[in-house]
Image (spheres, rainbow, N blue to C red):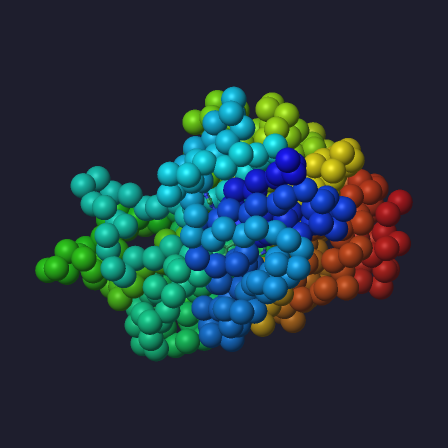
Length: 414
Ligand code: FAD
């Protein structure tokens, strides 16, 4: 009987792993199971070009159907894995059937965190949306009408990207953020205020330190007409034709925990993507792994992480041992701005900037002592490779030289 690898979750990580296994020379059976109705697709354009109508659905797909056929990957879309039987090495599917595995990879990603209020099931509201899937965008698109009032809850990347698209489509946007500044978890105050200014110039209104208190519904009780919030000591009601909730992700770990695997902000894996069960791996947004970069454990939500984790898992599955060693990085697009972030800035003690905020071209370097631990690069793609190198090499730098544009970044390391 052929050896069989079953991958649960046909998203960015699962799709990449399936084809990556063939690239690594794996000749056994590969079954890729996903509960969405689509081929594996890229999520980043959902809140950018796809919502704007500039990126087609076909352009989202990682590969066309024919590529999976050629690679002899058995792709089961619209199929949910309901449970794992570790002793029998089987998964049960939504239709009641069971499927044997030799190795199982959990690439289940996560789901949008919901806003909840006592006594109100917000999932039943017709004009409240999350941004996680093609289906989400399809359901909200018809409401993105010029002049409509959009209230966005959450000032992270997804909320800000949707704000940028909405403004370009002529909507009136108010964004509510619980923290005193935007992107507070991931960037420094300089970049937060820069991003806020860029959006304000485009007409986005902000309520920072805003605590969302509830929704006011219409007579049908199915549509939100206003969002109530408590902000800087004042109660406020903000008119809304539609609401986008972008308050983060909940990793899909239930299959793993029901099967007795360790879960702690993600499915716990080692640097080879393996859980404590030698037959089960986990990758991508759903996995919590050791980080050579932080020295602790980390769960990342980014495409570069999904791709790298898929590569590590493919190597593990063909018997190579290649530990995950990549430095975290991420990108975002808002209006014409391209943002690239490398490393994690938490714990930095000072920030050095290079370039011009007014021209919307600058890099912010986050230092701990004399070492750059993270950088945000805005509109200066040529800085990015050097910034990655500075973060990964942990080389000591001189802050004055780092800020001096006449010195090439590659030469600021002591
Ligand atoms: P996913 O892509 O979420 O795939 C998981 C799949 O598993 C899903 O299809 C899910 O439905 C399926 N699944 C779950 N449970 C089961 C089950 N029991 N049975 C069958 N199937 C199941 N990253 C960046 O680096 N840059 C960006 O600009 C960026 N923008 C983004 C914008 C948006 C709107 C979103 C939502 C994400 C963005 N990301 C971005 C993050 C990036 O898309 C994710 O990190 C990446 O998709 C993670 O891949 P994954 O395979 O781990 O999870």
